[in-house]
Length: 92
Ligand code: SF4
Image 1 (cartoon, rainbow, N blue to C red):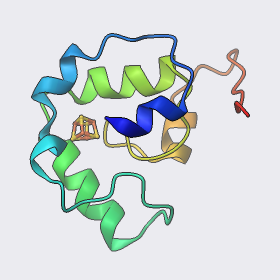
Image 2 (spheres, helix red, strand yellow; image 1 turned 120 degrees about the horizontal axis):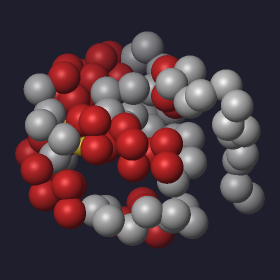
Image 3 (cartoon, rainbow, N blue to C red; image 1 turned 90 degrees about the vertical axis):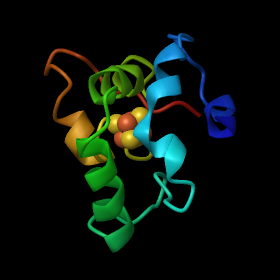
């Protein structure tokens, strides 16, 4: 996934991506900027049947990726899953 080169990753294990449901939906943009858009709803529907949704969510949180839909959650929803004692840092 080329976009991952834009992030400094703490967890490089991407084996789970082989089973990602979104691999079969190149027509969808999981990094669409507009929350609550039709595109977001379509992406989240795909995530709901994804066998690696938990791994996907964990990956995004572990790597502090605050863009795009991961694990069926938007950035705002993901931020609310992080324990309150964790600081959310945006990387330059
Ligand atoms: S949960 Fe969604 S974004 Fe994550 S791998 Fe599955 S389909 Fe892709």
